[in-house]
Image (cartoon, rainbow, N blue to C red; front, side, top):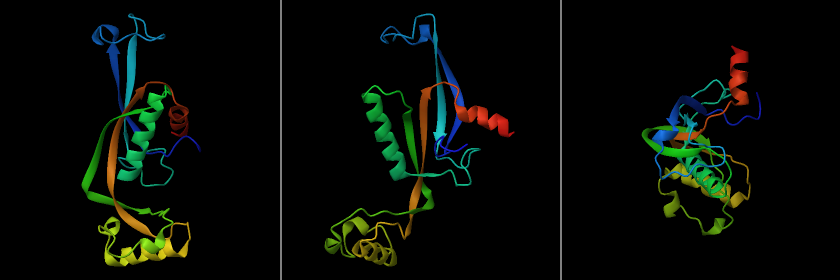
Amino acid sequence: GNGYGDGRAVSVGEVVVPAEMRGSAAEPDAEDTEATVRRWEMQLKGGGTTPFCRGADGRAVLRSSVREFLASEAMHAMGVPTTRALSLVVSESETVRRQWYSGNNAADEVTEDDPRLARFPAYVRKQLIAQLRSGNQDPDIVVQEPCAITCRVSPSFLRVGHVDLFARR
């Protein structure tokens, strides 16, 4: 279905933690009595194609993974239920091509020897500078970025996508 997310996450398992194993330091919340268990779903995000990736490659890059991590931690700090990142692994060898948005309005200050562009080849630096100076905010270049995989955890619950997956089989 449409609108359920980007289709990059795949469930790898569920961890069931009985109340007696959580320790006395954990305060039970309103829904968590000593007789209940906590169920946590572990997911990998950005590991490749999934049944929900709608034709995309299912890969994530470092910048989007870090952005998602920061947003989920901010939401958690505000009390909004969300997934939480356990780990973030960046590949040293696998890369993917992604669109690049500059957002930089100080285009005249950027030169080919700008340290922010040092990791790009000379021809890419020229394209980036030309894009900045054109004032065009549409991405018209792509860059190679390292792949990243996030292991995240969330309280288990039935998602619409789970039902949708079984209906498609």
